[in-house]
Image (cartoon, rainbow, N blue to C red; front, side, top):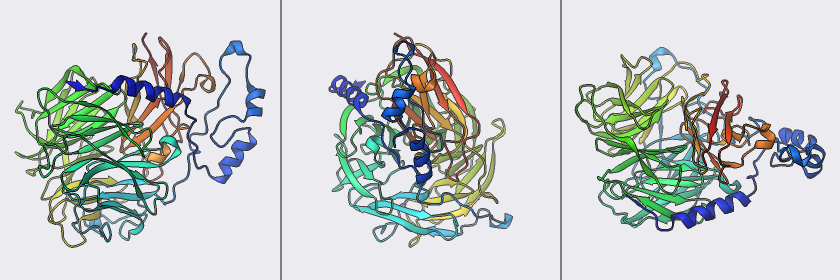
Length: 542
């Protein structure tokens, strides 16, 4: 069932305003800016008026060309990026540093971390809110991290995900929100100065209720810019238009029947992936109309073991066309399902740990999970025989283990030692030098009959630098024209290992398009750039 009384008007206004919006200006460095200007381009990577007139073809051969900026000409990060330190074999799995969020981090309740602007970024807050914030560290030497940014708020709650966007030319993030214990929703942050992140706005969602930490609260968010999808347990999925992060608007609500306690949510192009929190179920939804999710026949499934026994998961994550459900009890570990055909989710493999699962993160062939009393690194390069690589330890409820380069950040969300809510431990001896690559796209290459409101999603083998996903590195254009003439304007956004392209206006009917990710643009947290270019051909319907 889907509730969205203002959906049609809101979506129509979104397309209209987006089509009239200019391309967000970046922050190119002086050298690339001078080179662009000397070639007749303005500071948005667009041709200058004189250059456009000189280069414009006759009107009967298509629109005037608008060359793409170079893939790697995105604004430089302030920080140095991921870990640069090598380790001895004996140091692997041993904690070498602890992370405390700062003055306001009085509870030491931590969850995931990511990299942003070249720094490690941690959203921190307990499940009951009251105190929270964002802290950024330089972890080029991961055993000697230094604080590079700090923002505090009393409007945040425990956040299991953080999304990013550059809508309107800004730099924004979204986390979970809670106010005065009982009210909450989503919280938008202004990251224009990562030395001092500030709250941009808060949107309270109907039906939010705490102190039940699982029934009617925001458990995760996903920003497929400009829309944010919020998984809100028994309240289902809320859909938020964040075209202006300072004034977000609620567009609609999708409630699952039968009830699915929505925990984790991912938007990959036209596909919304939702898994239960402390439940057995998952649901794959068609969001080709982004404000009106629809069930995909066959896309609702139950997590089962290889023997067919239903098992509860605590949370999940996605990677490489698979969903990884972290088994809550009864053996711990991970159950893996192939969702590349959303109408036929298929069990792939499982591995157990005798733990009690928390959250999962994927890097290359490895999956890292928190298991309450310990964390585990699994090697899934052989899906027939997945193997445990090593375990990590940190006192407290160790639910999260996030791989960042050749280290993993361990985080506990309860019972932490003083100023030890997170720890850094190496898992590989040498700094990461493996480039990112596209491992799954949705809609897939060759898809036809696509809705004119389609978006296009890419999943990578590892988390990617959000700033490197921009108009120069993710491109959509008509196949019957040169790229600079067939260019489609759109919003590009990245969250963890997922990159999305949202066209700013409906696509043309019955038209063939090319989605291109050129080499040298998108990078991982250590600055390794994409080597294998990716292209897909996609065709719209009527």
